[in-house]
Length: 265
Image 1 (cartoon, rainbow, N blue to C red):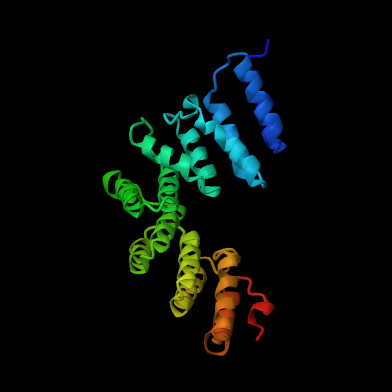
Image 2: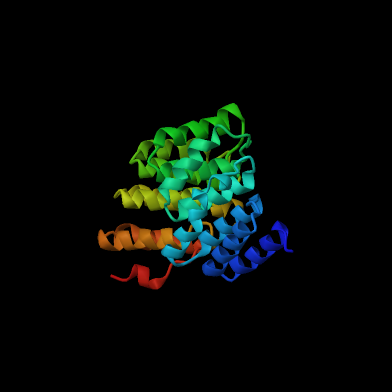
């Protein structure tokens, strides 16, 4: 008769098809045969939940975390997929359980895991915990943050409306992090949300200069959505003539895409 590995393969196939109904049916059959969940099953269900477009189905997939045998956080891959799926769907119940369980487990976090833990705590509005994980990573472990981890911490501070702290953190680390594409984009988008249009323009100009000095051209250095938000904010504030057109020229010289409609009056 099929063993757990066979069912894991079937489950993986259902997940690739984004078939939540079939995935849950397979798990129900595993339960009927008294086959215990393993880390592969939990990871597959989290990846399925992460990519399901329907929120109702996503939460049905995430409901596997209500089972006591599903919280296997001795495995970093499982932890990362749980955090990623729950952050994406803002599933605060399971995020809270995952973050609270982390400190009592044997997982030695990587820079990727720290970024996800910071994102999770930001979603849960635990800014102090974001700082705790950040300091554990850079001070206690001596890990240089990735661009993504820095962006996660910046997002967390901006979400808590700690604008000056976000700017100070970025300026303290931007020369030490190998690439700062995510961090610039996160900071520019966050500043715009809080109405700091001129500061966002300054950072965009700085990003253009950085691209020119290091790579010459990089159309994807700043997230297109961040650029679009910036030019629409300039448009709405009546600042296209003063700031927008010259900024667009700098962005285009750095290879970035600035659509003409963003510059329309």
